[in-house]
Length: 318
Figure 1: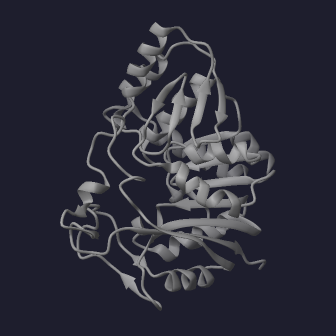
Figure 2: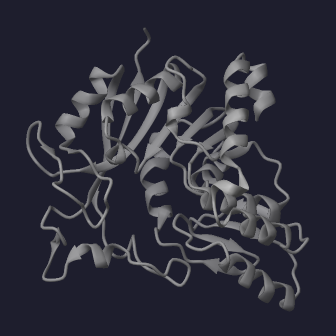
């Protein structure tokens, strides 16, 4: 990936990314990293075939002995919680917290991916990147600061012996230069409401795109007329770091003010416990625990329950 960036004229950024990755991947910087590394190294030496299945799974298929599959299932459990998916590894169904395939189905017909380079901000374990490659993207670069999600990506990569152009770096979008202009498509899903400055986040997304590049933005919104904004007093659905939840009208204005045009709302959906839930592979609290037990239209704090909007837009040719 770093060579690709240098060849594309972004050598200085490639050097900065490489240095930043080395700083983050420091055994002393995360108590579980060395354990995850050992588990990754101990994965069975099998070579599967990677495919983005029609039913939404990212699958690694191939012949495998029953006893190896049993050990592999135990190995994969080591990397819990699995939040984005689903995945299927040699017949082992990883039933993730999110039915991310539903989100993929909402976006797949609204984004141009054939021969496009893609930046996926807050990508998690790279689930969407595999689908975007299968849809024709020439390269996907994912950013996510959570090392467990980076390791999950590397697990799938190792099991499939995949050398496809799909990388997940242990970094956030603060690594993006203001005027990078390197990607044809930038995706940001489930990130904006975690930012203390949503305007700066949108500006960084705009700066990542080439002229007329396409943005796919998915975020929490409030179902309200006009330009309105919810700023939770404390937690929202038990999340500490939720800052601003705009109406769609206000979000559209934010996008126009930060260098986008052709803004389109392609989906607006209330999140349900069928889409986000606890599973064997993510055994912690999930959406059912975040809602008012007497009124599921409200969060446990009394705010409107989560609604997510997906928008597309293009960077202005300026």
